[in-house]
Length: 344
Image (cartoon, rainbow, N blue to C red):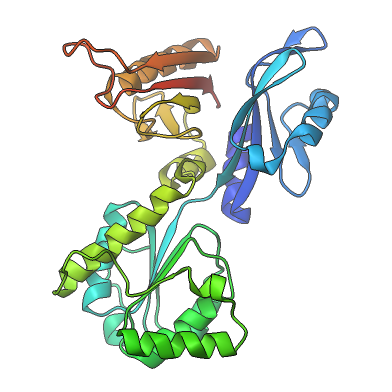
């Protein structure tokens, strides 16, 4: 039987994003509704149809700008978040830089796509670990990549003409990051050309070129590292916690074992993971995702086992500012509140 979170995962995989609202504690019609959920997509999808009236009032009161947030609604407390599917690294160019960057992207848990118009540079032997390889002319290949706001594009093709064509196509859709290699002169010419074609200066200012952080990189491997570093830097300025990692999505979509899910609902101080970060704990002890590691995560795993056994959700605050060096919960400090629930 499909669980509600199984449905959430499948909708995320199909649509790319949605809003999820969870009751952290509360009651309606004389019964406890803790852990009840509602999805906001094109329409409102509720976990329990008998609670549709309760959810109608809540959906009208939520502003997208507030998310993620904990909110008191009547006698109930809810957690509302905007979830997006996993992030993709799309590398236009399978040459020496692209080859190394693809390996790094896989290590960084990106869903990696490599595009090149040369069969010798776009094949499974060269890129055995990536999720997708497209060997077609660049403009045609990019037609197959439906862009989302979670996409990170790196343009490192074999020639400036191809670079420019890729950039022009990418700028017509959504993206989290786009970087293009090239000399200052050639980049300047392309930017002027795009301005003349009607692309706004604001949009062109989002293009990272020269690409990568300035660390004195010279070899293809060093350049790939500096590009990856810039991608990470941009990624950390976005709401990374809203993005559900592929490992969690896939486990939720399969739904083959009992699962407990831990979600950070509030954060104070310098805790490493933000509001919305999630961790799945399976009945066999396997873990997917993270809420920051350290002692707090270890304790959350123990509570998850308890939740799996009893079925009762737990809302727990972890204070990681403990100054006892022999009993640290997490070296970075901070306070997080975590909601742990059995989801299937």
